[in-house]
Length: 468
Image (cartoon, rainbow, N blue to C red):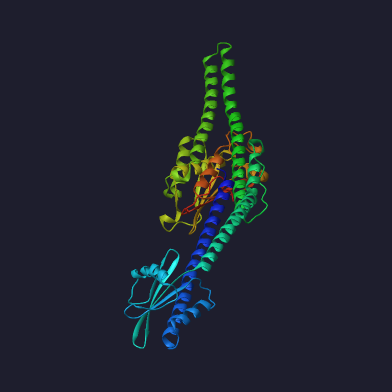
């Protein structure tokens, strides 16, 4: 069932329920009021008759009967009997046959106090009337013809009003639902037009205050993330294909050339060494892909613990020394920590080590002197790391792109590398809610400033850049 139909039905049923309860309430209150009003008028009529009979000595039953019949009253076909304490009839405004037929109906009533009962649309009233220390019983009965006619007319009016109201309600529900869902239909039309080829399109937002506008804004944000993800994937696949194709083509070409004729042992050794270099390059690229995939893990699946950053930096320093790359890593403290927790953060030691290693490797690799200085500072909220090199630098217009997977700056094309390292750094920084600030000058060097919070907030923002 469509939402439009469901809303129309729900709205109609709701209004129908309210109208039904209101109409029934009006009818029941009118019925109750009619019964009470008729009881008071009938009681008043009976007491007037008893008062005239007992207070006026010279009045005869016949005269009183004439007075009853000629008195203008809203009551119709009222029958009254006045009985003494022994229940002998002193007065009756009807004949003996009617009396003998009607009086048995009063046998079920209490004779100790005034009370009434209703039977076959007639009201039977018994009044205990005390006069001059004598007890009398005033019995009366009548049918509320006028009241019942009014109730019947009211019931007819309520039914007609209910039917007309329901018709108007259905029409109003259809028009209101159609108007309310029109913005959603427009959103559906716009969403249906968005394909993989036009992810740059955005939903138009006419009203910036209602929930539909919020939905459109949320969807536009999702489109931005999807567009970025598609673009990143496209660039990643393109650059990865290019990066892997180069060593594979080189290996294939060297093997084909070598197999053309017999070579000396030295030539074979030289070719194998060249192939080994290409394989190592491929291994570096593939390992970078694996590290990038690990860095893309959801924050909830990563184990965080207390990590001393100076120990990680010294560990990276030792690893690079063992690799024999000729890197010179110097570690300095802006101010010496008073206690261990001063330079301790909440993080994943393996990922943080990968991040630090990639930055140091990147700084040394693009520096002629293979030197990088790591400065450690801290405050109450963060631990700050600065990686300072004297390398070739990064063009200012390209700094915003350096964290994209497989992106390489123009002035680094002649250097070995895959362009994956800084993407991994950025992702790990995001997972640890760290900010990265990059300052660089061509042929003077680059400063990577990473500010890592000592405590993580409950929500970790992913999918954007950590570059501040």
